[in-house]
Image 1 (tube, rainbow, N blue to C red):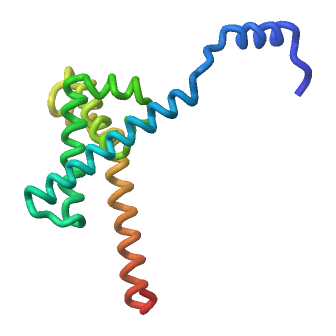
Image 2: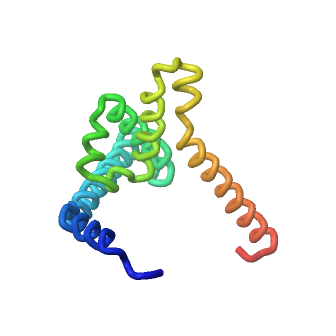
Image 3: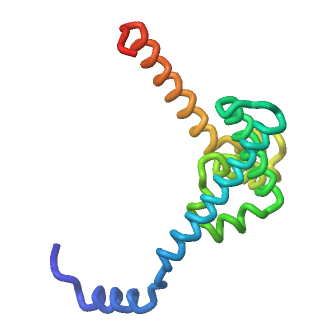
Length: 154
């Protein structure tokens, strides 16, 4: 690669001078705290289902996930989840709540195009690949487990 020209060096020094320093540690702490709070809320919902509806710890998982997705969709619809995401960054992308946010954000963004072509057609652009990968990987894992059981390994 050759040496940099004088203009390139001047531009790089100007760029470094005006570069915004990001508070990485502060952002990591905020993401950790908000992500942890999401998990605490999820655990509280799990205990709610166990205590009030006599679920076991194993059976309370599915309604807890559905409730967390529903809550994140409501918060996205009311514009609250965007503020959480701006504050927490990656901490708001906890898979369950991030999935609900992704689905509803796409639906809200395309609602002016109509319910069928706008909302319905664009709602699962991002989430569709997540659902597809989840179903496919679950199929592969189940297939491996069945084969291992058939061969007497497990």
